Image 1 (cartoon, rainbow, N blue to C red):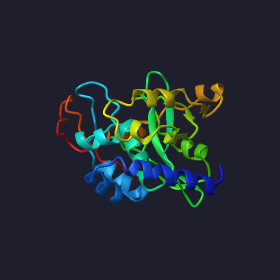
Image 2: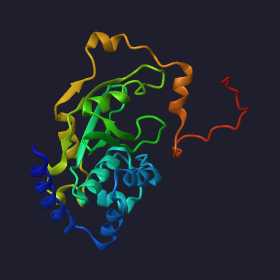
Image 3: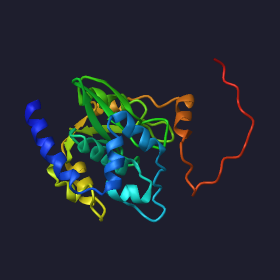
Image 4: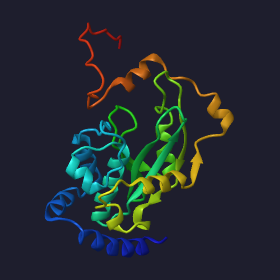
Length: 236
């Protein structure tokens, strides 16, 4: 689709979205006028640990709950982009059944792709817009996507999934969980990161690499606090 056509479609979609929002929501989304600002907002938003069960909250519900997990953060970021007339694009990153999938929000600046990501860990985070294609961007997650024991688990990624297929009312301000949206994303075309024989030969993470998975921004209240211990010196 040509860039002029996309701009025309997004201008109409933006007006429909604006008409649904409260003054408070307008003020917030107006401030989030760059992908970088959206990412900073998500970084400061507490993680939804699902203490009361699994959720798939809409952007409006995220603002009310003041928390989000990766999928909720991705959809919220897509809404913020759409508010400013930018395409709301998601990418699903699929992992082994023993691991969890991850969802990011794609954006383009001067023809280059970047990603907004809500995560509680030091990995699977924001990507600067320096990548020439969605695949090039997606492949940056392959090395760090691993199970706790170090086994690398990323399998495939979806093509850019546009939320323009849904009316803004049905996902931006929806009172119910967005389960069907996530099902549609999961069922959308996915591309393998490599042939099966190559995936079977991947090297496990080293011990020092696995330490990165232990770094979190928000402590899970269901887990005990780590005991204070002697810091181990690391040779530089």
